[in-house]
Image (cartoon, rainbow, N blue to C red):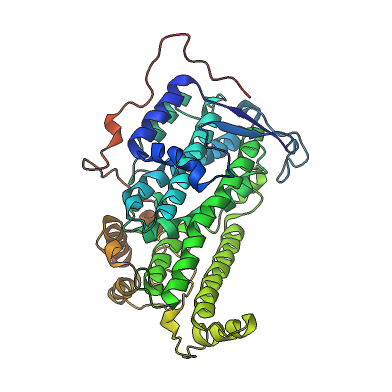
Length: 444
């Protein structure tokens, strides 16, 4: 298949460039060193891609077999409303990810790790740009209360603490967060993009292939360093230990699981032809995929520690240590990684605010559960605002002054008021330009 590229109208393209200058200040370094680190890859372009030759008929749902929609006005109002919500949420996550990664980007141990994350950030910028293209290339006035320009302005004005999904409102505390986020949260992104590739809205579906190709690199940006860190930990390095990685998994996996939505939902998107799976099915598949990633990381550790073991013997050793709790050839259960229980530390969905531990243990009191969380989550995260907010909501649920559903629906507040990441609400990103200078760039 071939692709078609275009840019959004100049005022909006310039707005994204201004946003990039503020939140991705290392972009010029990436461009200057692109050939050094990615000699076989086409150089990054800030544009929107549309894949040509995609399936033209609706692939799932009540209208399966009918022609896909090319305009929002062709869809039922509720159908278009769901789609618009998904586009806006996707845009928010892409820009939000960049803001998070920038916080700890400079803490990378090597230039290669740093540049890989930088490339991922640039491609997230392009993904956000792709979603802005969808907002601007169609008329959403029938289902949205805002114009395309207003939606772009609102998206670019969000900062960590005001994005639409919880995982993108958590500060990074170390470069371990950068890497673990890529391995876990970008993996959710892969699932969402793959599901949206069959969207009944043709422009959404044709936006996905290039995003998926780029998302594969984002996953590698997370998994490759994790593999290396596990092998180094097996050799006795203290820079990134398995205990540190385990706590990062405990921090991020619950937020990744919540990104699929409430386990009881998703049927509407399937009926409308926007996604092929309900929330619970997609979440379960994601969880099992993460389980395989954790197993692979454990294999890296064991094979580096016991170089004489065959693949099968290493598999057996991991089972003895992680499942049976034995110490084998000096490898203890705490030396290997354990996937957190699927209902652990959840604030949304069916398990929201249930007192379930990382290993599935159910705690009788919130006090006991709080002590457990303090043991299994990163210390730097415990000292932050997000964890405090979780505990405050959990106490209200425990006291009966708020239901779990109400606590799950709490909207994060914008909290940045200065410092290294100033509040962008004070900036008007989309600026007026003289008439005649607003046409989009030529399509190629």
